[in-house]
Length: 114
Image (tube, rainbow, N blue to C red; front, side, top):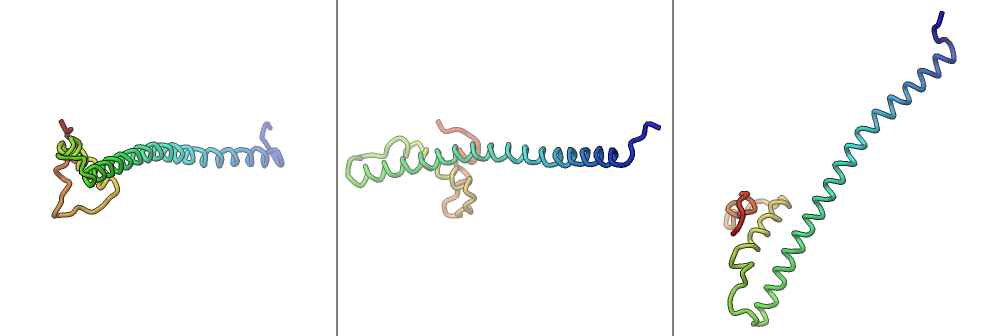
């Protein structure tokens, strides 16, 4: 009395299982999409840093080789290029060079340049 039998039971069971499967896939997919979006944002920041380093190095090299510079510009004197280089090197996972360690760079130790 009041029990679901036969095809009604099968329909309820199938609908319940379909909903369980849908929910079990929905959460991991949403989590992966959030992680992917966050990594994309980080990638944009990484790309900006790479472009900054490239622009700084190219500008300095061009001015130095053409004789326009009599002394180092502040970006080189203040160690900003080294800091940016070390940050990008660590971000890329390049192994540390014992002859030129980046461990003392402000970007890798967390302190700011003045």
